[in-house]
Image (tube, rainbow, N blue to C red; front, side, top):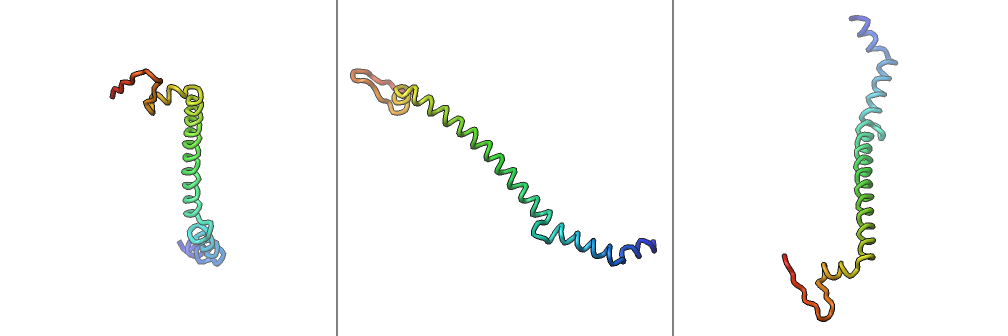
Length: 90
């Protein structure tokens, strides 16, 4: 017991413990800051993958629109050819 107390009062051990506590909680690059930065990185990676999927869907929609312009105009804007009748069923 006396040896443990003497070890804790050793100036090197005390300086090292203070230094480690300082690095873990009070420094600019503390563990808390690193954890928050990692959370931000994870969130941005999730957003990146979501936006990549959205870009893919939008490109497919654009491709479909360029191939089927008449179909899109008829369905979305209720356009018709002269002499046709349009029935809207909802």
